[in-house]
Length: 333
Image (cartoon, rainbow, N blue to C red):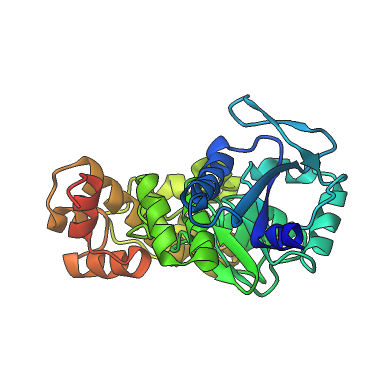
């Protein structure tokens, strides 16, 4: 009876490992849960976490994106223990079509048996493909957010938070955000004092200041854009300080305004106006980070017209002013 109670009080945590996994997506959460056990061992040795690395393939050894092999104690085909929390570690979204369909079936069955199901970084794509995120608010790595939103329009993708909880589903942002998520799960399980102690031990913020969106570009990487979107981007990149409108862009491409807007929305997942706005925002961010130009000049060169308009867009997308963003980039805040 005593052993049965002990097993219940120790929560089984599964880190689901896929090929090309990023090590920090595994190591970060593992260190949070392991440090929790270290902090509990004196006063509550019968509580804490038991961590399992479980392969999402038939092989017990999975190679990370850095080439380092990870040896898993189990695979999804031979799990023989109850799971409290299952977290999918991030990998590249490019391998999703190579994953055995059984993995998605396994996750659909697991959702009814686990207390919490989550994903680190690009692991959100796996949950989405399994059909477990319909109607959910989710986050993922800022670089892949537009791809996720376009592929699964029924989701509400928000890249501002480092992690999001929607019911029993948890998703986190890019790479190190798995640590933020693990600390949040720890706080849920054992309270803020212990979570704070673990965060201090790991020299981390319990709740990291700022937003994930402050770390990335407003637009996806150039290589991820369609050929048509790249063509428009190349056309506009040296003209952002000029007065631009959709009619003139369409005319340059020998298209009607209506047809251009329709095709561009289909190809990029956003309207031409929003795309131009984000291009200007990215240019302003780069100038704030890498130049000493005044905010007035940056607003002019980026096509915002005035510092007021620039500030409005920064607050809209990043929740900080241009001046504060510059200070953060220089490490003064």
